[in-house]
Length: 114
View 1 (cartoon, rainbow, N blue to C red):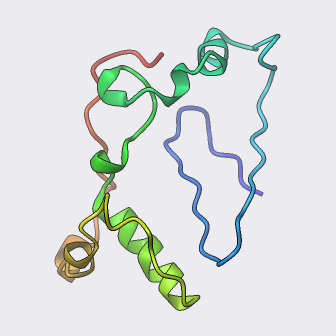
View 2: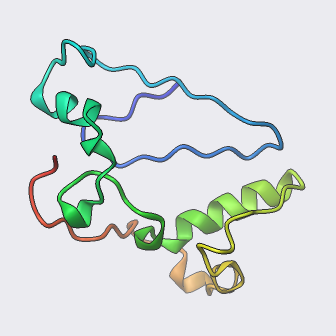
């Protein structure tokens, strides 16, 4: 189990051939949110792109190195990606080693998250 710190960007990945489930826990509830941000998330605004003031990093804005790590992990398990319609996976796998290090790049946010 891992709990990311508040406001930390994070993603959920499945690298096996079976469906996965995750359990998201936080303080408060939809009915009694601990903070206003939780209420907005419960109203569906947590899935708004950060380029529109939300907290969601859309696939097209994701650092391609993240997708590459996932591609490498599923390949070890004999799984094929079904995401080639979203990502240029051959180009991602051809990234030179010199581009595989450094801080993860996130798109600019237009302002306070909803």
